[in-house]
Image (tube, rainbow, N blue to C red; front, side, top):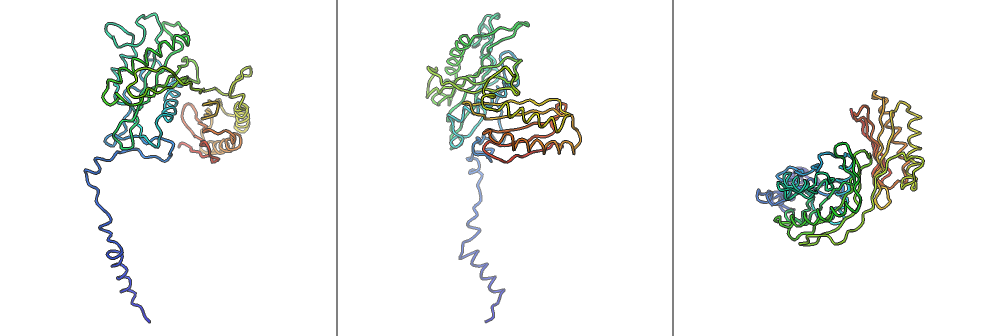
Length: 365
């Protein structure tokens, strides 16, 4: 029996378009009012990271980011402050249940006044009125967390940074933990009371996180020491939970014993450094920073200053580093990254994510 192929294909087409489901009916147009009600986010490729809300299609930065009381800031303090605040925020506001948005309720003028000294001209100032007294309350940062509906504010995470030393007119004054904590209680209570008066913040949970600043000369920066939750309507914190985190510099001096030496991280780093400098002797320096949380490595960052400029040299150097990372840091559970630069110009980056055995690299052209 002969089959008419043309008729068969035509019949199949009719079936697909009609009896087997009308394509035109299945694809429904998206109306403008539907788009208006949808929350626009960055999306994500890593489910441990927050999706950020886009306002009218644009990411909104915080108007108070980087604002400090003294106008001076240690870059490592800032990095640890923002990284730690985001990490602690996950404990109160899960990335599965909330969207992220940098806080917009506090503007620069308001926070600048709060960080200033109390005076007749600035009654809102939270630092001591006496100009001879150190500035202790150094920085404030807010992150908002939006519920799954994309519109409702579900909570806020506040980062408070406080100085343990203060330099004025060339003289550095040490600040005791006791004096710092007095300022902590005063500042936190005042900020909570004021924020509870802002529309939308009256009855939401507010996470309070206390950061201890490192002196400007300390390369590793400071760390968070306490966290707490102010439940709906709360205007003070009665009890804090201690936070155990630290950033240590590598290599560690011979006379020093710390987590990096106890965990074998320092020895692994020294072995790595020796191997790299032996194979590629034209290096200016190899240093590292290891970030611990609850005595476990979260991040190991190594910075290498090189004198190699040829593409073949950089490519060979990058491949060698990647292999050393794969072998020497296999037992480290956290993220490992190596940044290679020459005269402050980035040349390459080598990374190995936490929980992975795969090392990836990128060479900057």
